[in-house]
Length: 385
Image (cartoon, rainbow, N blue to C red):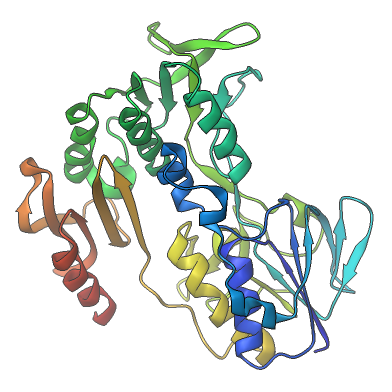
């Protein structure tokens, strides 16, 4: 193997480049990134960056010793196609980067509000450029803010807006934010953080339309109510950035489908991070859209890529955290409807707790709000199960 191209210059792409060198690959290494920025950490964008406590330079992921990676960086270069026979990545400017192997690490893109027109004052938050634009608007006067979606990113944005002293409303279509991930009991406890911090939460009614002509003036809800807003932030999720792989021969199903070792059906191509959908031994698939997976998957994928076959499987228990209103929510594992929740420390009513989700008498997931030590213990138990 004389040349490898990593497509995606965020955490997963950088981790893949590091893993290649750490595992003995000495050939040519190119990293292609659609953004003009060098790799940076995304989680602070919705927290300290919006609050002005961090600047772009503080988010840099590259370290001084990364110069030893001997990477050819192609930043601001968007991949538009993969020519499978030659493993050639076609860029938007018409140039190609041909190699012996490709690591797909293109991440995900924020979902816009379906059917909504493009209006000034409407934002999504996924990239540094997104965060810079949103931060500028939040600092202009005292805008009323409406956050569409009580997702983790939506809750973190609402938390930042509340900390800035802005009138903030969160609109969630479901009965409670994050109910599909946390279950109704924990979701209700976490939802209470909004009201406790002066943020209005409206649940059970989706957004029907944006109000305004050239600039947004609010939201029109499906039940006819109107939420006045000078700034609207849409936080309804993200979709894998894999459109550029259409026609490549790779199996695409809300991500690049790969085996437990992150190898695709196309020899010499692996996928990692938000773009990867892993097919388990039982035929089900899963996609881990979290920082920990983007950091931990590349060493496994690279090992299999260099071996030319699957010699290792990615088997980490899914884990994520979210900082909201000065509190830390942590979660590990995977839940299903019907799982039983058992609180082992604190109490849901006190908004400080640690709990496990059980299925058939076995713990399958753990959650905690401001109980880091208890959560660490529970998480270790999941990994050992």
